Amino acid sequence: MCSNGPTPSVYCIGPLIADTGEDESNISGNKTRHGCLSWLDTQPSQSVVFLCFGSKGTFSPAQMKEIANGLERSGKRFLWVVKNPPTTDKSKRIAVTADVDLNVLMPEGFLERTKDRGMVVKSWAPQVAVLNHPSVGGFVTHCGWNSVLEAVVAGVPMVAWPLYAEQHLNKAALVEVMKMAIGVEQRDEDMFVSGAEVERRVRELTECEEGGERKKQEDERDGFGSLERGVHPPLPLPNWLISGVKIDWNVSESSLLLSL
Image (cartoon, rainbow, N blue to C red; front, side, top):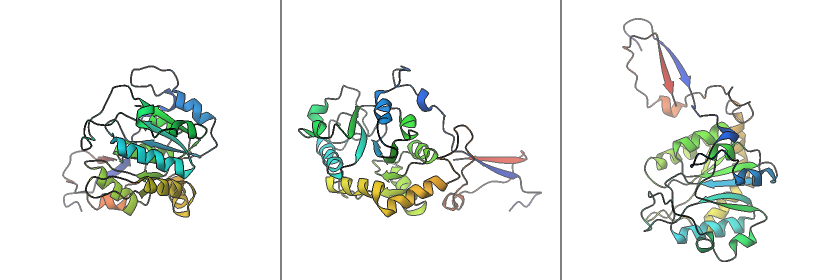
């Protein structure tokens, strides 16, 4: 409480997401519409699971094959952004820019067997535009906070797969507190995720009651998923965040702005 005069007003703003949508350019600055968006145009509504692990998220060849096997066994439609593996299994923070040879990285015959329901994209995809596409119904994410906010604004439920740093804390908040994501089970020593776990979580996200509840919560969270772009209401600060915030009220301004 303020001891020296009235308490200043507090306004919660955010998420602060650039409304790029269909105009989002690729890394080279080319404004041409990405091919994955045209592919999404041909898919049923909310039928595609989008897998993207950020600009620095890479996997070992063994892990990539497990992801591929899990996606194939799930029988679900998917859009998967892949990068070249790191030079060693532990260097997941290294962003590789060399061209990706999908025939080497994927299990033999995977691309042919899944060509009618899946698309694998090399290195990069316009994430905001993909998440806001009506064909996308789920997001497997590394839990980077920008990606989390983009998914929340788009109203897309998530599978939380953290790779490093604060992403593990973000996963805990999403799964255990906000109930907006399903967490994957990772092997303790190296964070490896089995193909069976990938299959289970993708199925749970798209067809099970628990995944449906998370989609319902996303849709109801201030209507972000259904409102016209540019007129989103502010997202209320969750109790878990407010409880950890300490504010010095001895400020000269008449109000204080907090941003997520």
